[in-house]
Image (tube, rainbow, N blue to C red; front, side, top):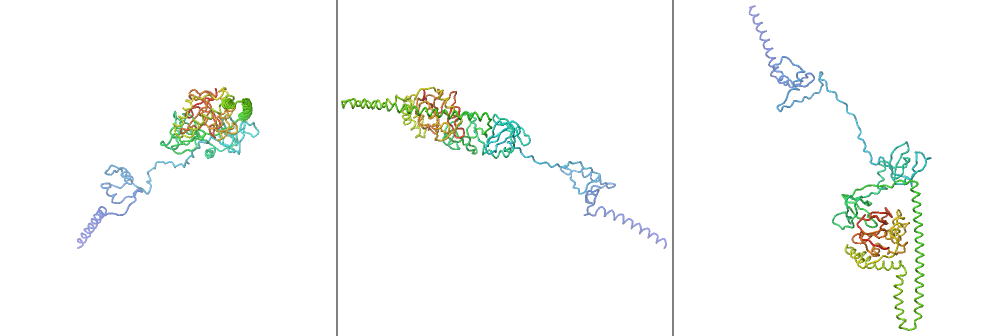
Length: 495
């Protein structure tokens, strides 16, 4: 009995041990665990851990990390392990902290340019001191290149002047850029041999004139692919920007010596104009006296005739003689007769016709009619006299060589000094004198230009392929290449 109890106890214990061991194994291998277990700081599910550890003797957190790093998917791409906690033994590669950098502000293209904002002008000093010598003036709106800064002063170079100006009198950089439209002048320089100037900004409209390469013209408007330019006088039109280079120019400083020289030039020009007017007035008085004497002589001769038929014949002869005598007595009177005739047959036609044929026809008819010079003299003297007035203003409708004149007023006033009377307009003047080839033009000859088939500008040849003329309000009386635009014709009025 006692022996049976011992056997039962041993069997029970054996069954309990066997069940416990077997039961633990089954639970550990077959039960699905939904919880996550922290393994060396990396998060894995128990199912994953059991799968990768089949046959392993023990778990190794470092191996798991290594395994995870070395495992590749079916496409051969390594798995990415997302971690919420750093691995204790892993040493991250050092990374540099980002450095905050400010985007540099673009520098103004006018950073070394100063534009005078003085009420009238600012003195340019030889050294940076208000007590130092004045070497020039920078007038309001004139520009200078800044070469050095010294405290409140800047060293500048403008035109022929180098010196110092206080910075307060200058707009510099972006401030200078804002003044471009106020004080800068845009110029279009032609980059081709010749360029058409059109009436409108398209290639289907009329061509006003042709302008020459390497010449510059004031830009009145910048409009997309086209620029409206001033050629001269009232000739304004459009050119394609494809064939021009546009630049901005400012007035420059004036040295003290240049200012004095300009004052001398103006005084000399005013004196020359005064003397020319006095001389013209003297000639007019002499001409009037000759005409008066001639009239008295004709009346006396007429009264001595007693026969009525002879008187009639004498009166007819006297009338004819007066006409030719008036023409032969004075070169200026002959000039008026020729000029008037030319203007009515040619200049008038040129003014009234808008087609190119009209202007060309009138010019050819003048040459066909012969034509003659209006007076004698030295063409070089005419050119030299005209050059004295370069720099004086252009005024539409004016005829003063010093206070302002337009193109035909300029030529009329110049030739007036030499006893030659020209009509008032360029169209009328184009019918005077003798027509010559433009290539044969000499100093003192008149050069004419047309727009839309109508003569609308005149200049005086000064030799060397150049002219002097009252060009436009911006440049005033100036010199230019004779072919700055295509010449229409040339006339010789003095020989």
